[in-house]
Length: 332
Length: 288
Image 1 (cartoon, rainbow over the protein chains, first blue to last red):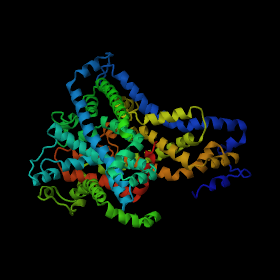
Image 2 (image 1 turned 45 degrees about the vertical axis):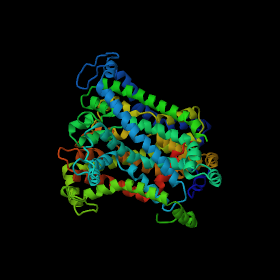
Image 3 (image 1 turned 135 degrees about the vertical axis):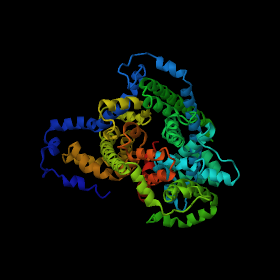
Image 4 (image 1 turned 90 degrees about the horizontal axis):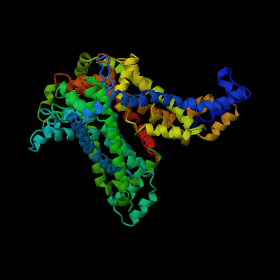
């Protein structure tokens, strides 16, 4: 580090630079103590203040709003207790959105993480063009969600899409991807997977590089195949990272919104917020958006947000427990 | 990729052997690399043809000559120039601020002793897991109260610091900044702020550069919150892009030209600095 030696020599005590504020800590022991006491808190304060104002406060205030018949367009917002929640639990559209979220989440997360693991395993060898492979794998992650959906909506287009052209070529009927539940979920899951697989592969690769080489060498001598090494050594060794990616991916999948929103916009502007003409691919986050920012039912949408929050906690907790229980099977 | 690192040259023998030993590995990686790059390449193809060319069978697979005509159509249809400018202002401000405040907080967490440090650091990590998108309605109400709706502040201010940045810099500084250096500065009579400016900032530069690039990309690509809080006539680039792609007439050429214009600068930066960015992501990833 070439810059490092500069610091102490530039400020030797005999020649203190002018300007009171720059040296005040050195001038009196009282100020010095104050500096030591207060500075750390002052330095971490911006993050906590901002997060409190724009992260925590809205989340908690959501609970308060959810207990009201709160509409942007009306002047009175009467307190109605748990009525919003009662209505929500019997709201078929909400449960439809919950199902879609789960379905798209599973379809995108499971193959994505599995493929990422295999890719990282392949990259964790002496390879030619290692950096080129890594850059190409991460390229999708640099592309914005909007760009991804615009590109894939064209690829999955009914009339001029490349995917349908390929299906035509091998004699399979063209698919109107937005039209039904299964095909739209597959298309959206493909977009998510395309954007995130390389990213997760690099995270796994980072963890794999921390595994001591000797273990693999010993395994190779014992005649263990590459697949066996992945299952028997790598996966158990990087378990914390796997758990981390599963949690992060789960939280991400519970909040999917831009993909269905823009994919639906290819059909019509109305189909955008409803996630298709029959809500085939309306996710929970999109339902929240529809209620909050199309019909401006803030109270009702807030109730939906809180139930979503509980669902996130529930699903993340469930995944965590499942992965933990797999431990026995993985420790070979 | 311009300079070959030393160890790569030394390993050349093993690498050549590995090519012969693992043809399947290369085949798989090449296939995945193809699928990763193709959609981006495809956007360039579409952006450089007219709509009629897309209907042809087989579809065009090489760039055509229509790119500039399409670009000027993009700028005519939406306030795309304004959107690009807005995105530069937003992403630029957020990048400077996130890098500065993260380095500051990272310094405190990594090297200063204070009561409650571990608890606060843990809290920072936990906040990374909070799905803040769920608080979007009160956040919007707050913006109405502040009279920030439709203004760039609404997008900038909530993003000025984030937990990831703080955590990333904490990790880096606790490893890369020698404590003796700080002690030497203290003995010379430096206050904490001067230590930060003259010792910490120079040492933090490599990590701050990576964090800055990651932050710029995230801010540039942010879509949902700008869509909610900004207006169509004064958008960021992603919001403008989504309008291009969801007009009443399905004009794929227009949408993908916008995509190419909005994405190519980032892709270019990424390809040039990819090695550092990847290093940063992989470093930040090892959380133990």
